[in-house]
Picture 1 (cartoon, rainbow, N blue to C red):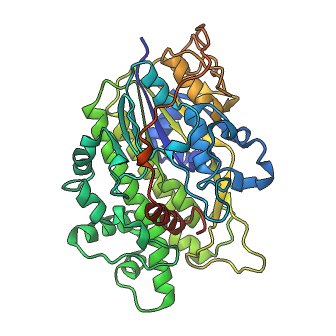
Picture 2: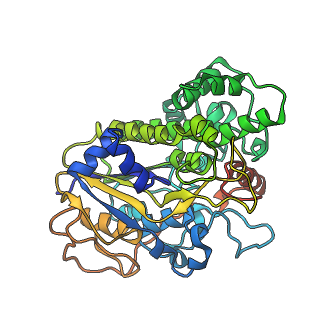
Picture 3: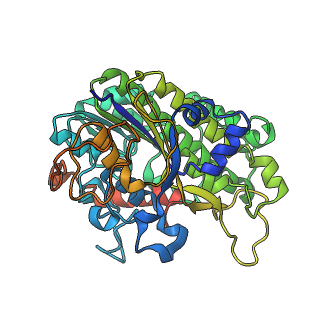
Length: 449
């Protein structure tokens, strides 16, 4: 009997950075997975076949994470960017879970009567009635009741995230900032409550604690445009994604305790990607002053992820399989022609996406050591095989032989495809919600308005 599969989807975790930090004695839980588990480069370039001319811009996270969960190419599952430019080039709407055309792992398990826990995964709003729980990627950021399935879990999970109820989570708190107040050049929100101040100070001290002058610059800025820009970028690229990840992580831990009967569980983490765009230093066009000020931010984001991995691992049994996955790595972004080295935080990113992604797995049944030829297209088929589910003709990827268990791939009859679990037609975001979310993503640097 197979154990459960728990997957931590860490956006933007880079192999070169990970290995260098492990070599320096950091990231203990991830170092342990490297020693005792299976690991290898995750081929993500094959998933963007036909988009190669776009270079790093083709490695778009909604596309890649949907491919990982469905085992299919973007032209099969339908998600190729944050927004659907094919539907409306002038005012493209955001892709939603309703636009995904292929079954994802949780749909597949639902069709076989097995439960999944899905927390914060990209392109999962509106939450659909799977067997198990979906906490959509808009949890805490919209009042839409379709943010969670089952809907009666909204308040209990908001309490797990630190709010009295779901309405309070949406109304207040920096990790649930109203989307229409977020623009890339907008000021950072005021820190009004003692609770918010404590949360912000905790993040600032964790990442900039050896530079108290930078902490105070955020908390007590002067009236200069430079300080306003500094606070805005530090909020959008560090404080907000850190608090957002913490919110989803607390919810995930609560669900792992509440619903131990699941077959598959996944939680998505954004922090490493956000800080890599804003604070990448290796080979980047940044000054020595920038490196002194911010060179520790990204390694500390990786430290935080490693600690979260340990917290999840503490709730698992030896029979369970833990997978840590990233959809791409990072490298230095080329500066605009004629641009000077960046001395301080700037609106332009200093890091950009690159292949490959990271794949690590650990469990009693997992064969330890380096694994070659793993594609992001293989993630869903390999997990399905481990859980005893037949492969589908619709899959574009396949089972990695012997990876999660010695008998892989199992000799099971093929099925044509699996059905998606769909929700109600009236659960689409309103135009106002669409506009607010587009501003929200623009503020975080993921797209242009």
